[in-house]
Length: 88
Image 1 (cartoon, rainbow, N blue to C red):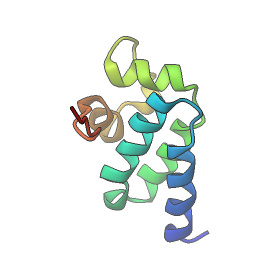
Image 2 (cartoon, rainbow, N blue to C red):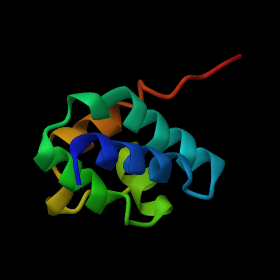
Image 3 (cartoon, rainbow, N blue to C red):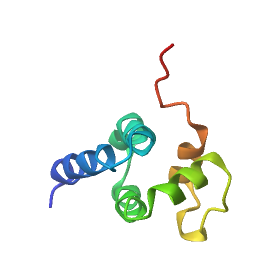
């Protein structure tokens, strides 16, 4: 599968988590960062989004320890939470 198709499929999955908060967190993160990912980072994100939303959100907010397999640039960026637009 080529890069464009993988990213398109991942974008859909990132924005259709089932819970609005998770959609904003994971989908917003994907939109802000995915274009700059290399193949290894795409592979890692594909694995990450198979996790439960509550776990991903807890790791991003720092309320739970991040499993070693996810430590790295993607998780560091996910923890910044500066990619979720907040309107007043």
